[in-house]
Image 1 (cartoon, helix red, strand yellow):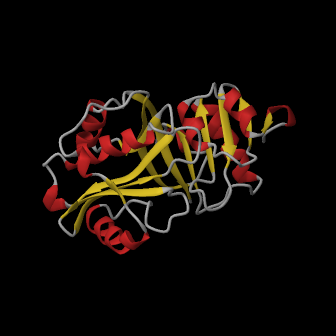
Image 2: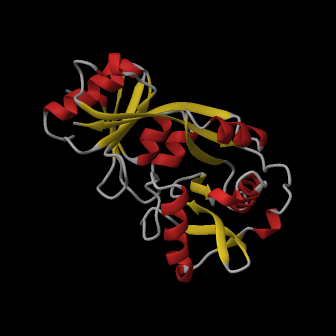
Length: 246
């Protein structure tokens, strides 16, 4: 249970409690009157429907898990929803939350534009007319992503074409105070040619025209992508876990 003195109301209060951490600056959208809590070194907040996770937290893992367990107990959080939490494990979740699935990933960020990449000039902003090609590419090359054409979280799509064919794409999902890249993928038969680096660098540079930081998320087992993002300047890191409630 979250006591009254632990409740935080408003985006500004939550950002201050989180020390204006880049993750909080990304996750707490502008224009939304957020509600959350602060408990023993953890800061968390609830998100409205359609925003992806139902709740998120930063800081100390134990207090964050205890707060989420209380929210499950009182019906605020329910089976079928998911949470973005500090890095955790099945052992730490046991006895606190009923978990259907657990995915580990890293939130990476950079405060400087990337080194110029070969073929970066091929990166273009896409339009609604490109949605069928986007859907086909994503389904073939990155079927597990939740970022798809029509996703209300997406601001813009970017891509690289080879003639009339779309061979790489990524989404601008910037809704808070920092830029955010998502759904980056390259067609399987075009990998290993530097298109991933060109796409990431071109999108990152475009978002630096509007933001002082740019970030992205990457699964911890995607070692090649992590190596690429580090090379492009994404050296800030916050280990995360997506906890799907059962």
